[in-house]
Image (cartoon, rainbow, N blue to C red):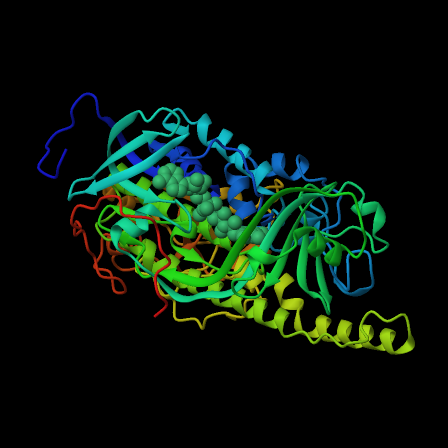
Length: 572
Ligand SMILES: Cc1cc2nc3c(=O)[nH]c(=O)nc-3n(C[C@H](O)[C@H](O)[C@H](O)COP(=O)(O)OP(=O)(O)OC[C@H]3O[C@@H](n4cnc5c(N)ncnc54)[C@H](O)[C@@H]3O)c2cc1C
């Protein structure tokens, strides 16, 4: 097989989109593509078991996507105990003194608390509940094939598609695949990214950690402080986080360590120190890891894309990694679907990087700020003394924590306030941008923003109107006739639904008589009147107009083959 190969021999598996990696981001992309009827094949080298669960924190926006895919309610009520409090406690030890706490509702109570801004709420949901539900949903679509135990070995892109070679891990059986597009959702060590020669840029190894996944069936009964989703441990022995994994007996310790020290840590002693008591324990897995703050220099090379950890790595502080990756999958998913359906313009796929890379940079940097503010906490020597001086030290530190650490749990500006601005697809309306503060979300229908949530009289959310194709909202008592815009969409093959909304609160929230919402729920354009040239507007939002932001490039890279073992690129 080489680049000169033409046609597609019978023994070659033909597919529209090949996804490398079946972590949460690859699975989310498979669901998004399946939901849009785009045939895809997902290869996951693992067997689907989660040996070391991470990524418990699903944010509001991710839950809104899961709602559209029909799996949000299932995840909210099953798996992690729905009434377990998601409170975060800063403690001297888990069995010790509480210094400060950040209250957060349980999984079940969160939607009511969020009802003014979202039809969903954030969710605490460890990967071993999320991944199987995503995988089952991805496998339900007749156009999808999800394969466990298969590894992408190498690939050769050309101008018309991508040749790929996959290997069944257990048997060594090989298969040749011809795809229109390849998406590398293959994590931090991404073969796809390395083979393309795309480097991460940013700050490598900002800090080192030792992760310990363990069972402690008596921990909840032993702590006088009450349950928590996370205990942030602050004492003279070191800094650690103990996170609830199943809300009962499984936990994950993250211990800050000095460079090169992870291998020398006595894991049982580290657990004893963080917990503050000798409890029955079973250690299930131990993993040293480094925290990075990096973003891939490119998200697209010809017909190959990067998404999720393959495109960006950040500190877990704030829970941004997987959520950002699922946002990538949603953005890329509708664009691939549009191109496969024939109505996506030549520059639509380039807008993926233009829109998603700045979001990753913002999130990566904010996560590093959280991490830095945590490590800046002072630890006075008398912190654990059972004395007046000890009490005073704990009160003072508690006040510092309340003042300096609250931002990590107030991230609505990251969750819902990210916007595609500037974007080659969205038309600015001249209004000033809302706050860019990561902790602030100002609902707005300004182009580039997520179209805001409001409840409809029938109990649905405005967000439930969006997803399939574009939606043109006609707002208020006498909105303009939109027949010319609908005709322009029809002529370009763009699916467009017109929806009338007259509720005063929604009219005020959306602030214009016409609002055009993209398939991913972001506003592309709004105005009080139709534009003079509706066809030009449609061409712009479908990526067929000259892109003012990103250059349009269909160049095919040179053939790429599997490279040697991954080495962390040097920081630049
Ligand atoms: C301690 C910790 C806590 C975290 N908490 C959160 C959180 O609360 N919220 C959050 O959003 N994020 C969190 N994260 C980050 C989150 O875990 C990652 O961002 C997320 O897992 C990335 O998903 P992914 O699908 O891109 O990559 P991965 O989860 O790494 O999945 C990549 C998959 O690709 C497969 N693969 C690799 N190469 C190949 C190949 N050649 N062929 C086939 N398959 C391949 C791998 O087996 C793997 O299953 C946390 C991270 C850590 C370390």
